[in-house]
Image 1: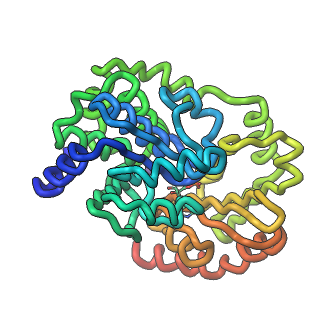
Image 2: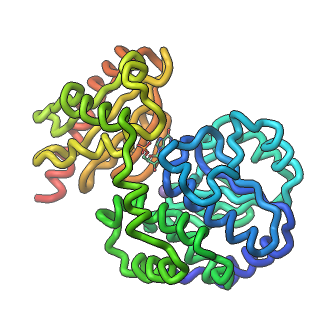
Length: 347
Ligand code: 5GP
Ligand code: MN
């Protein structure tokens, strides 16, 4: 278990105790960890008698709608007035699973404008935002695991009921591929045991998270692997592309290609993988994954105005699909150099 400083936990406790109206914000296009941590905290704080509004900057994926309390999430792009009101009247704002206000898009001015303390709890590298309390632990595999430890240290874990525990467990599972990677910390399994003691049905959660697919997801995943995966062995790289026409044709909805970018990494010799999805005429979402020392975070920060983790990062390209693909080919020499440097370091 992580030892937090007494000062941090004391300040955390007094901010939470003093607040009546609390807002929780996660990053846009929330994943299991962003939604799971927000909902876990929402349930916990409500059990403590707080008035809580959980906000997502934009719509959450359909496959996470089953999480207990998901329908209580205010989606900023739909519930604009509700979100504005909640932030205007909040006594405390939590920022979960992001560390840069760029990650909440158009919600940023409202969060910045909220005249109340702010607590950030996150596991991404290099925090780039201010807050009254910044709990940043990049060594943690998920914000959910970190949140559980914070709540425990503050003695608030007794308010974590089955629903809160289920949401927490969901984030821990999705950010580790069901404990397949970033999952060597024994503390994770103590947390998991505590959550299961609170009534989490882990097997059924696994089925909902990893074994439930829409027809559009099955088809689009198959299509991308069959027809849209370009392997460049000379660059130890794979590139998957999906155009707007194709997303339309397959009836793509958010979350349908979750995990796609990881698949080429299972090919021996492939060190990094890139997924380009054209979401608008001149907007291409970039997702990158890598193995070992190859930092996709560095590439996404430098070239795609993004960031993330060392082996899992993302960004965006404001250009046509053709220009985006050309930009990827342009950075190949730089990627080759990174690979060479990695090899030299190993020798
Ligand atoms: P994904 O590829 O699953 O969308 O994201 C992988 C990781 O990269 C996540 O941890 C996410 O926080 C980060 N990430 C994805 N897109 C962006 C982006 O546009 N900006 C930043 N800063 N991080 C991103
Ligand atoms: Mn996360």
